[in-house]
Structures are given as C-alpha cells and as structure tokens.
Image (cartoon, rainbow, N blue to C red; front, side):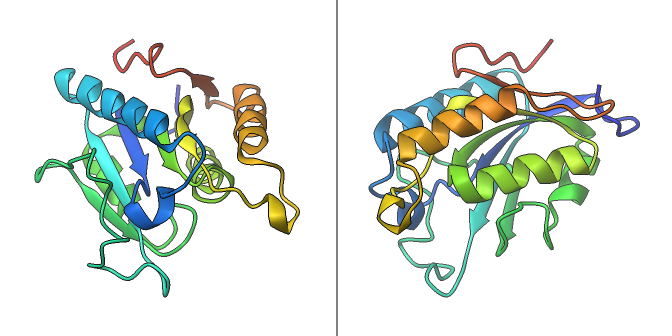
Length: 184
C-alpha cells in the first residue's frame, strides 16, 4: 500500500549490526540470532536483503568495530549502504537501490533502537514506504546513566508507538521474527 508507484516488492533492511555498535547491547545474542533467521527467511523467498553500515569518527571504515558481527554474513550480491547519519536514507544510495529493486515495503531490523532504527522508520514513512519493525529483532545500548530509559523500556516503547503509527496511504506496524511474512 506504499505511496510509491510501481514498487510491489519487499526488502529486509538490516541496520548497523556491527561489532562496535551492538557489543554489550540489550539481549544482543537473541536479537542477532533473530536477525540471522530473518536474513535466511528472506533469502529463501528471494527477497532482497539490504545491509546498512554506519561509520563515524568513533567507528572508522575498515576497523573491527565497523565490521558486521560474525554471526551475520552479507552475501556479496546483496546491496550494502554506507551511512554517516541516523536515517539510513539521508545522504546515501538507499533510495536508488530500493527503486532499482522496485521495493515499496521495508521490513526493518538492527540497531540502535533509539537512534538509527527510529530515524530510518520515520524516514521510510516520510518518503512513501510501508515500514514494518520486527519487534524482537532490534536492540540498543544502555544510556540510562545519562537519563534515558533502560534499553528494555526504549525497545518496548518503540514497539508500542510503531505498532500504532499511521500515515496516509502507508502502513506501519510491528511483527515478531516468527510472524514475518515477506510474501503476502
């Protein structure tokens, strides 16, 4: 139901599941295992998997921290998007990659819930995509020492508000890893 013309396809968008980002994150191993399940499910159904990889002054390209976690192995044929902003669309090639793949619906998983996941969800909806968050396949670090809620609450709140998010002509929502259906 996306507002993008001639975009019938769905893609799995895996955001920032990199060593230096998810190390020590809430339920890291469970979330990474769920993402691995999603990747395999997408591949079995010939659904494109698009990998997003963040870099910054603290996460330099090519370093161990910048690499994807060892449990996930992007296929050489799968698109990889380099980014420096929280929204995976901002100043990247993501839109052109998705247009080429005729994608209008995104299934989103990865890290960090309270920054790059939320920014990309909103960026997708604002650009006309349907955007589904996999509720048990995103994680974040504990920033409660600086006044943020604990990670479990950040994740629960993000799932709650995205489950009820609305925009004209577009759908949002959440599903669990088990519930994900790439082909409707």
